[in-house]
Image (cartoon, rainbow, N blue to C red; front, side, top):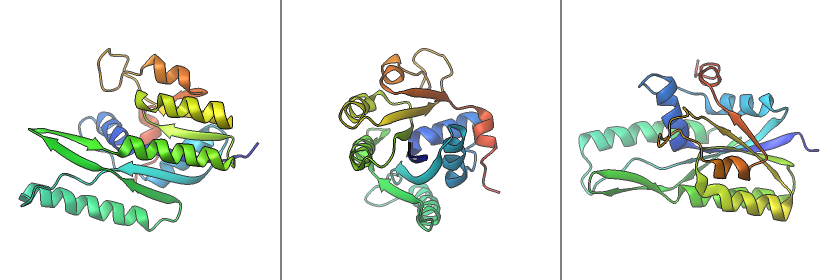
Length: 190
C-alpha cells in the first residue's frame, strides 16, 4: 500500500469552515501544514495538494472593494504558487443579480480526481469538501480504479445548513473524517 496521498481541497468550503471556526472571522490557515496534518491523521504522507478556488468577481470597471479583494487574492495565491507541493486550479466567479457563485471548480476537482486515480499510484485520495456533486466521480474512481476516497468534512447537524452532510456523499466514500475546530487551530499561519 502506497503511504503517500494526494489531497483535493475545495477552497470555498474550506473558507466557509474557517469563518465558522473563527467565529465570523476567517482563520489564517497554513494550507500545506493543514493538508499534511490531515494526511498524517490517517497514516499517510501528503505528496501533493490540489487547491481549487476562484478569483473574486471583477466588474468591467472594478469597484474599490472588488480591486481590494482581488489584490488580497492575488497575494495569497502568489504565495501558494511558490510552494512546489501545491497546484492551484481556478474556476471563475459569476454574478447574477446580487448573487455570486463559483463556476467550474467542481468540474476541475472531478477531472483531477479521476486523472490521479487513473495513474494508480495512490491507494487513497483525500477530498476536503461536503459537496454531493462529487458522488458520480467518487463512484467511478472507486469502481474503475479501486482507489479509496477519504472525505474530510464538517457537519453542524442542522438540516439545510451549509454544513449539513448528505448521506449520499457519506455513503459514496470509503471513509468520512469529521473536521473540528482544533484541526484548524493547530494549523494556522505563524
